[in-house]
Image 1 (cartoon, one colour):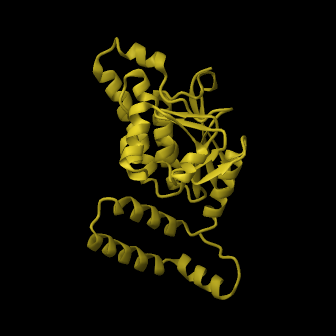
Image 2 (cartoon, one colour):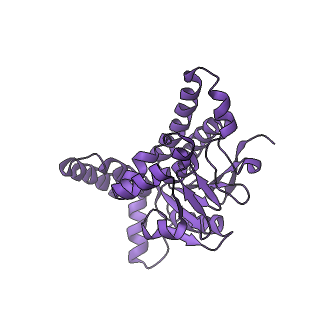
Image 3 (cartoon, one colour):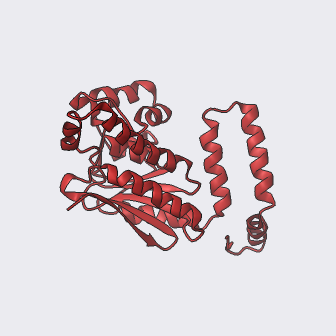
Length: 259
């Protein structure tokens, strides 16, 4: 069975499933372009309010396929560079995507799979899931934005230990470190991720897009620049029809119906 990225709808949520169960859902080049395409389609579809990324079967993603990497050692370096560029294009697309993206993690979440989960806006993980930056265990350095994401989520020493030692870390510990948003019973990660997505789907899409953009930009903005951006987003959202609906619903003590 060839590796693929499957897509289906669950209400207003697009579910992307990494499908390569024979290899613990190891990633491959065919998935990267599919991931970018799926998000581009979801961005232009107002019926899609959120995205959940998960793995088929018992595991989220084991990272890169080592057999493929061995084969690429016999190819010009440009071959592997192009593959990583495609992965990074998917990572950047997730970060820039204006709708919430949630990772639903079961089992193994290793290497580029861990990087992929970190690129998502929120992570829901099963209690028995295991995360590992496995790169250094096979004499490789990270990709997929692992160093960028971990250094923003964790103290430097903790991030370096995970990256340099290849230590395994469980969902409970990552939850305590505020990297994982929610820990679930085994087998319940996707169900709970979809429930979280439904909560987000009920909120104004333009507001969530503003929040994500502001949070992304805040990491490199000065306070003055960020305050100006917050002002502009606030004014734009106040004059959006959803603000009229939201305020009226709150004052009328009824559920809001956003579009």
